[in-house]
Length: 426
Image (tube, rainbow, N blue to C red):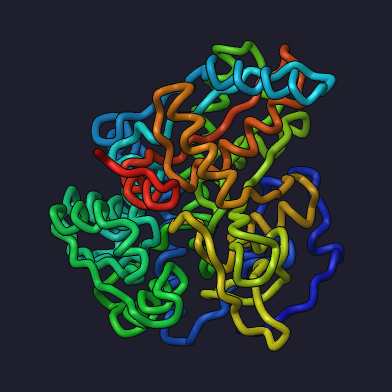
């Protein structure tokens, strides 16, 4: 990985419409691009060409919308979390804050088929795979939700599927490993490095370099070389498009704030992008604060990283003084990644999105908080957004509205959360 100095040049200046990225070269301001071996350039050009060919293809989008409606169960609800809102108001009263608590709404991506937002992207890329005439897909996964979604799309579309997963994540996410195998996918454990998402991505990239003729790599987040960050963002933007319409219907206006967790950043990009030109809507991304601010104890590149190249694109990366990728930690397997999507890096430097971090402890508290107040067990990834969303809502007025993207359900995390919380089944 090479280190690139951070600048706030005209390249990263806010455009009249900040949504008008990437450039034809795949740049989000100074971020993004294609930093890959020559062996992958032909595959990236093919992917870009097929995606450009379908962007105005009504038949493609009708097919995808049909799958969203009949297989995924879209639109997902916008849920008014009244007891969680009351909890935030109680916090406001105890802390003596001037506000008395905003109304909290949850965009229920946890109710999508397979239990998270990931299926929106895998179905879209699965259809692109069919258009390219390739019989096989590969994927990387951390929390297992992208792996399950990839296996689901492959089963539905008649594709072969191999999923790379770090052995530490296999331990933490046993349920999703079983689900992938039941769906017909082969799960390939990765024992190198930290045995987590970064290492699974490394192995998936190596596979793709040797199999581009018959294999498409379904990257699961808004990371990687162009055109992946754009494609994943576009497929996931159904979240924000639905949310915007639902806010107008139920609130009579747009929300005051939207909060989402950020690892690679696909669920956040999906809900933020349709709001990105609405300057009055505050957008907050929440990274994994882990155990402390010390390097190796967290997974928060936007909060503590610097620009560098990782997995094919330039973005904020956690790295040491020699430019080598740093070790990371999070209680959440899906956020346990040292980089972030280039568009999030662009949004950070433009000032359009505010990024913060929630610690493991705060996320675990939020995990049980949402379960106890609303009867919803969130994914540990989502729990980071819940923690920040409730804190923020407590500082707002009671005539304001805040949306949290409930990006995934917590079935997969129950055993690991129980271990971390010291819970024992009797």
